[in-house]
Length: 253
Image 1 (spheres, rainbow, N blue to C red):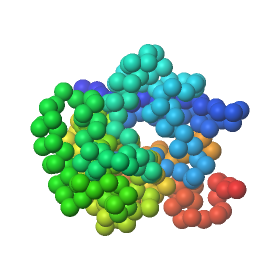
Image 2: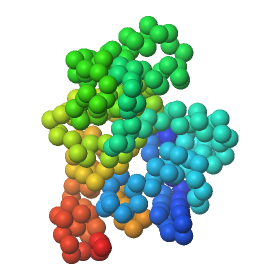
Image 3: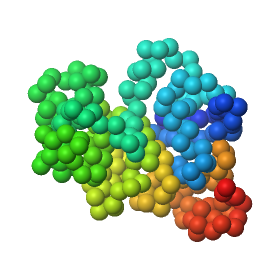
């Protein structure tokens, strides 16, 4: 039986203001798979958001979600597509005049058929799982950085998205503060029905979560492999990245 593909990126070339940001990018993500995408700051990894998540920019090639091209979606279908993907960026994007509880509840209030009581019960369970009970009535300006992250993370998964896209969400966090999030990510992947993409500069932090790793440089894929291949491959781009060696195929200006 063939494994179900949730996302297919096919020969994508993305150019903006005359500059090619992504060049002939192809990869696929299976249902239940966790993938780490990494590279240097100007490698192109941050521009995947424009193509995969925004879905309303012009690019060559195609992106298929559950077998359907996002290029062929009308406005309303594109909105539904975006609602099916959980997204979290490093700026977190919490609404400043809402409490932790209200921020997490917001997607369910707009995009679910649950009653108010059902939403409250479900959100409170997430709050408990993420150790946010003590601050659930507080607003973002009253929270620590790790509490802000946990709140934004809870909001990104509250709708139980089939695909969760985390972009630079953990870069400036102490590992001890985010162990609970990593535990939840591991449980989601263990269920085999949820998929995960993590875009990061620190791929080594996700060895225990991801089963595939893809490295970008200059808008191209220069390494793709399993966890073991990430750990032991002699790919020169990968070696240079992991050792922070200024000498190698990557010339960083």
